[in-house]
Image: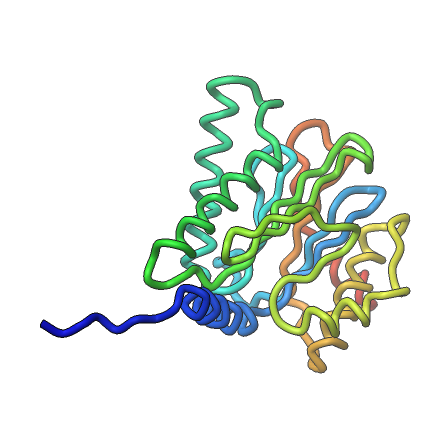
Length: 227
């Protein structure tokens, strides 16, 4: 009887993490900005039907980079979780923190027990009635959950995009101005241009009564970019 091949646990975890990071680095970046008017999400996506940024609940948005089928499965599960909780209890009981915790537990379980970890990183953004009520949670492939500040970048070229973004935007900007700053930072960080029709956006509008999520229209994007 042959002995099974032994791999030290720390090496196994290291290899899983490196495998997941390589997959995430291949994903096109998404920028998330916290603003006085709400929360803006901007990314490059050359598909008109496969979305990386979307609404989850009334004032909560979701964004993911990496393997589409993996973060799409989490997005759908999050919508079902939110709908069931809101229906069973109250719509106000559905929070970004609760959803982020559920995602964190799922990703942690997959990373620890499945053969292949998910090659994704996601963000759950929740807009409050005022800026102090905003929450942006970033969940990594291994289930690590953290609350991020006013700006974060998912996917490739994270450091370069954050450096390009530094000093070019402020929280009191209008939505179009903030989008232009985010778009310029993405193109500078990636060192390549993005076609107007390849921008995907999501905006959680603080002034909305209930459903806060909307997308920037083509005319808004064109005006913001000065085209």
